[in-house]
Length: 276
Image (cartoon, rainbow, N blue to C red; front, side):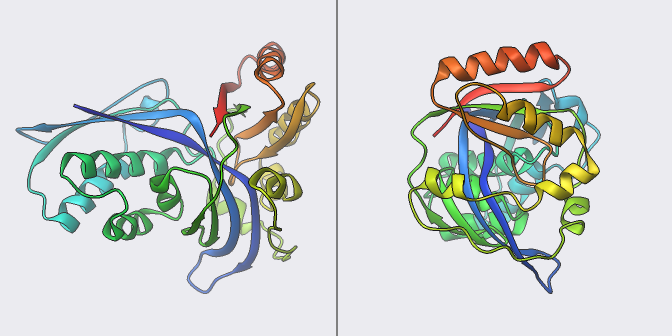
C-alpha cells in the first residue's frame, strides 16, 4: 500500500490581472504548501474501490464525481493502465475552502499511481492530465513553492519558506469560488514584484479577498483576529476563501495564536503547521 500526502495549498499572494475569454481569469500567484493536509492511500486490488474517511469525509460521501476518481480514470487512460486499485481518501481539510483540498487530493492520487506504475514524477503527461483536472492541480502535483501565471498552471519553481510556522483557520462558512471570481471588480492592480518568496508575498495581496468578505463577512473578522496576534508576520486569505492563514516568527507565537483563536471561536477549524 502506498501512502501519499495531499498537503494544504496556500496562495501567499494572488493577483487577478484580467478576465479571459475562456471563462477563467489571468492570474499571478505564489503557491506554497503546508506540511499537513489530506492523505491518499492506494493499493492494487482485484476490483476498484474508493472510500472516504476523516473529519470532513461526510461532506464528500454523496459525490459521484470526486476528483480522486477522475484523476485515477484519467491516469488509466493516459498511461494504458488496466489494473484495479483500492483508494482511500482521509479528508482532513475543509471542503471548498481555498486551500486546494480537492486539487491536492487529485494530485496525490496521480503521484501515488505514478509511483506504483513506474511513471516519472516529472512526466509531461502527468502535468497535462493535472491541468485538465483543474487549475490548481498542476501546482499541487509539483508540490513545492512556485510562481504561477495564466490560470495558475504555468509554473516556475521557487525557494520555499523553510518550515515557517503558520496557522490556518476556516470560519466554517462555505464560499463559492465561482461567486467570488464573479464579484472581482475587474481592476488590474499590477503583478507580483521581484525578490525572495516571502518578500514577494508580503508585498503582494489577495485580489479576491474583498469579494469573499462581501459574501462571507466572517472572513474580515477572522483576518483581523489573526493580524492582532503577537508575532504575526502576515495574515491573509488563501485562494477564494474562506480559509485564512497567519505566518509567524516562531512556533511559540503560532501556538499562542492557535490557543487564542480556539478560545475566541471554538467553532472554527484550525491547523497549526509549518510552510515548506
